[in-house]
Image (cartoon, rainbow, N blue to C red; front, side):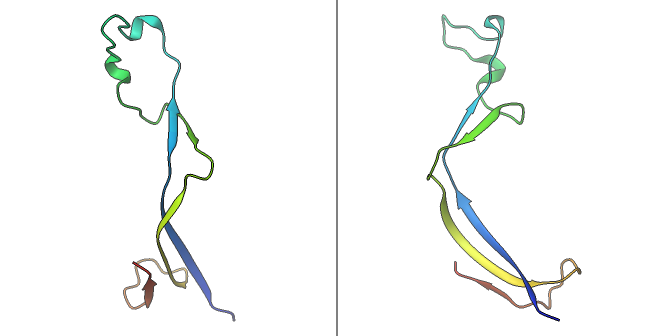
Length: 77
């Protein structure tokens, strides 16, 4: 049987997060976004094209057992 490997890439990227809100939910006179001042899972998320950057890559032998500390791991930190 052929060995299988799990490859992981830790990345960063630029996103635009947006949401349409009613006028009553924000104060446009004082620029107070109230509960919309920080995005959550209800916002739509669009990744800026070509903004992704791989910060770290690793691979490890893949099998069905989870959290097997005896597996050899390799990383390019």
